[in-house]
Image (cartoon, rainbow over all chains, first blue to last red; front, top):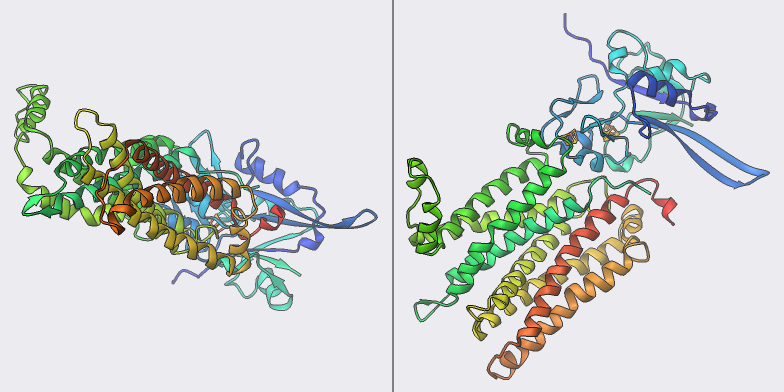
Length: 183
Length: 326
Ligand code: SF4
Ligand code: SF4
């Protein structure tokens, strides 16, 4: 039987985000992220002054780009992309040159001091491979995050992207980011 | 603002790599020039050849130390990734360094060479077999090395220019800018070394040659910087915002006053002032020692600053969050 093609992605309904940062905490615990580093974060966009104030919250992390510029520049191939779209770092091959950090237009990577290598969101590939959703998705109390397979017509994210309006961040980078923000 | 992932060591590395490329190029060129069938600048050729390998060797050492896992640097050579400028550059730099050392060896005076090999234990037969005179092959080695020296000069720019995520760098002009800056730094460093060498005082025709070479390179560099600025300010928003870093933003003073002014236009002025009388009015060229010292020192300083500004300002430029800078 031929392997089914998969393309994992995240849909983010950021208007529901209340900035509780449960996803950030969950990610830190799940992936042992050192103090001061983050694999995901919440952007705040403020407009106006109190009482006429509006703040938009927008979760962000590695976009698991269609053509990841981080992987392109990596001199050893330590940064690579799985067939299902997840972009990973092979820590054994990483020499810690940090070229990928500079090449990522979304500043999604950090330098892991202890190991001297570069880390970032893995889309919880260890969980996804056993059939679970990423930790941030599981924990979000307002159901902002929807994880799924774009190639699966029966999936929730397939339906959302077919019926709702959305945008991706800075498409002009040419990276083909795969975090879809609902409008 | 965006954090800095590449710091001063990278600046030094890019500068030293370019400096070696420039030294090799100027020395190789001097080796080819002849007057009445005799080498025109043998001392320049020798000085440049002996100096060229060292900056890049030191620079590569610094780069390795800057890695998160320096002992894994060999992995750069167990992979070849043609899409990664750093991968291609590592090979290029290594080959160039080897050629530069071989070239320096071909210029070693006989007695220096014997002294060097007398330090090697006599039982190391294989090493002693290298004790041969290859001075007859200087021109060939220089010819083989030229493309690699140009390649290294370009590479130091491409390493930054190929990063599409940083609008400050992402133009094809950065490669040429770094190349001409490297060639100019090389010519200036050679002039500086020759002037400082008190045992063999530099002669007027040698100063004239190096100054002329440097003027050509500085002018070429200017012809790249101007379109870089003009094109950038006429470009899309992300590039315009990136250019703001040197047009009003935090790097404006260091770019205009210290790099463009002190590092480029002032030395160019000094060199033109020195050369003009002999070029235009046919007067004999004298070559003032202090002016040569000042001009060459400033050019080297400017070459360093160019790398500094590009490495730091480039990392601060981005497709997003840039709006916050204003
Ligand atoms: S967001 Fe950055 S780190 Fe993630 S895949 Fe894209 S370029 Fe690579
Ligand atoms: S830091 Fe590691 S993953 Fe990033 S480019 Fe260098 S070797 Fe590749």
